[in-house]
Image 1 (tube, helix red, strand yellow):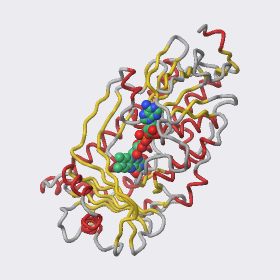
Image 2 (cartoon, rainbow, N blue to C red; image 1 turned 45 degrees about the horizontal axis):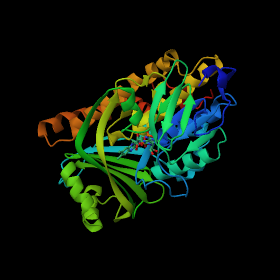
Image 3 (cartoon, rainbow, N blue to C red; image 1 turned 90 degrees about the vertical axis):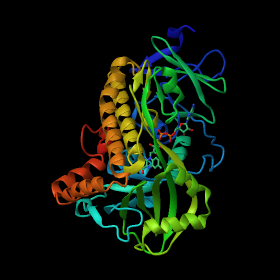
Image 4 (cartoon, rainbow, N blue to C red; image 1 turned 60 degrees about the horizontal axis):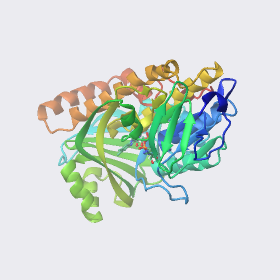
Length: 435
Ligand SMILES: Cc1cc2nc3c(=O)[nH]c(=O)nc-3n(C[C@H](O)[C@H](O)[C@H](O)COP(=O)(O)OP(=O)(O)OC[C@H]3O[C@@H](n4cnc5c(N)ncnc54)[C@H](O)[C@@H]3O)c2cc1C
């Protein structure tokens, strides 16, 4: 195909001149986003809303969309930072989610063996969380996905290809062509890989990963309880891994139970009664009697960091770029930093009339995001290694450390600001500023 014949630039934007044919002429867009989950779905919405008028996004996702319940159930509760909330506000999703989001008002951290009769509190964030607006929220993952999917269907600048799979891509000096399993070919100046931890595009690009698996399983479930949680999030560091009780709306909490792999599989295979009995040992009596609400689910846990977040006309975002241990509930928050940074980079390049797929533009995104993501992954990994063991000397040292942090209000305020996503070089969308 002669490139010059079907491309026109209007104020720096590539405009589609050909319609989707699925035949020889590829359908033309300004960006192709592969993966319409948390990261890819929000990037498509951000670009559709914030890029100059006429910008067109092709969004490809493997999950079918024909009914309301098109995705596999997701029992996770997601801890979202105040910065992530700002992104959701900017793309119009927060208004529909707010009533379903539970503000986190305080945090308590304990470190003890499983059979300890008492779990003394070593570190707490109480006063530091008392700010004008909440620093973090808990939202059910399925509510977030439904909000993203519903907004996408109403957005005229996004064309959704689902269910379909990105199979392969090829670049030339000006464009990237993406081939879908259905046979459709999409063409754009930039392809974004938001296709998760097992990203096919990352593999195809030749980008290598630093990756390892944890000998742990992440078990999640929603638990109803007798007494109110008052917005308190609790993290018990137990020898097999952290056990988090995270407040949802009403008298409900979401658990993230990191367990040694074989024991975790046993728990998943056991009855609801046996599972609830083990849960009760970990919950204690503070919240009264507990009962499972809905299915439990387990996830293999890994740490992954792409050695590069960009390649020729390709950018990686979300879990395709990095996956971290869930112990601090940061994975998606880090992914949404990518979304905000890439949106800002693309919008600024478009305003300057630049090609958004060039190495110069993509390098700006990579510089912004790679170090920050690697730092977060290293911190999560270090914390998991430090706490997930039953070593008495190590416990003594770490509890001394936790006690010192607990007595340093300045440091605690910094840690809360850091977790809220308000430190470092923060993209404008995460600060509640327009582009
Ligand atoms: C137990 C657990 C608890 C967690 N808790 C938190 C938390 O509290 N807070 C937080 O911030 N993060 C948390 N995370 C991390 C968070 O869930 C992930 O970071 C997030 O799901 C990543 O989103 P993503 O869109 O990048 O990838 P995914 O969610 O994996 O989405 C990938 C999308 O790509 C699509 N896809 C895949 N392959 C293709 C293909 N070839 N073609 C087209 N489409 C494709 C899939 O259908 C899917 O929609 C947790 C993770 C775990 C495991």
